[in-house]
Length: 137
Image (tube, rainbow, N blue to C red; front, side):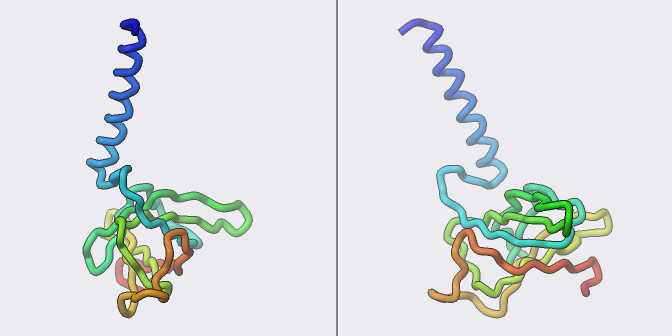
């Protein structure tokens, strides 16, 4: 095997390891399958990929994608990426909340009681969205 091929293989491995390391440091392990849920909002006010998702004040995931569906009704699709093994009920509400006066956002997952078996949402399901201001609504 020539030196050029060895250097090429080493470069590809270094790039792949760097990408995996960056994602791992940001809290997303590429080797584990996470749960994703889709939420639709009329607006999201500067929400970004990586916005934290909480249950009872504990971080359980982040926003994986934000996109405007169309220009007619301006619905925004937000994809949540939750930790592997995290189970939420089908009646969960994903509430956008302000985290301070500077405009920071987070998503709080709210539900009346934990799920058990059949009433758990499956990865890929759509859950209800709600927007709440800094002082509540």
